[in-house]
Length: 115
Length: 111
Image 1 (cartoon, rainbow over the protein chains, first blue to last red):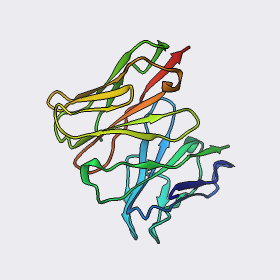
Image 2 (tube, helix red, strand yellow; image 1 turned 30 degrees about the vertical axis):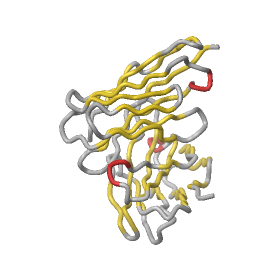
Image 3 (tube, chains in turn red, brown; image 1 turned 90 degrees about the vertical axis):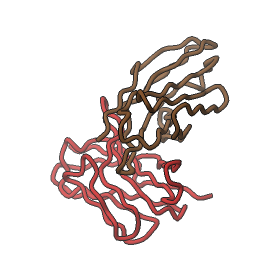
Image 4 (tube, each protein chain N blue to C red; image 1 turned 180 degrees about the vertical axis):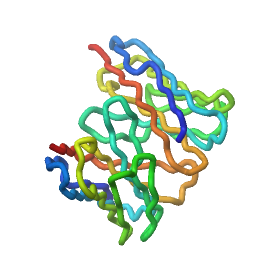
């Protein structure tokens, strides 16, 4: 069955380290998204991509980067991890052809702790 | 960034009772409204997508309505069951084709 996976599921890192969170989908979806979820906030968009080699900043992109070298993967990199980036990160994808009815499908999440 | 308000933020419901909650969003620049269901320790799952004023959608005991002119959507749960316990996320889609998620309505159904 097609799916969207994230790895690792849990990560502890230290301030200043570079961290990369993986997201892989097997639906052949054009669109991929990264969100973070924190207490007191809804899901906030970090970066998104509408296709290979396309990347765009979301509302909370500072300190994060993404690259899209193929359809299946959108890795999220924290250039220099900060304690404020402790959060749960969700990757999502959508097919990019369904217009307004388009639904995003979410991965299981990665819980990141920056010490 | 669309300003999305969901109320109440959390509610406790007795098993068998019905309940409803609200999502408010800017009525201008509206394209679609998504509802997601998010169970603890799982990932959000799509419930409904609505685009037209007056739209109503239903899935089992859960239904939703949409008023695009005044900028709100209601989600109803009829005869709540413990398995309905979850956070329900509202997400309007704006002109930038991105979803703006509210903070959610957390529902706890008490057996």
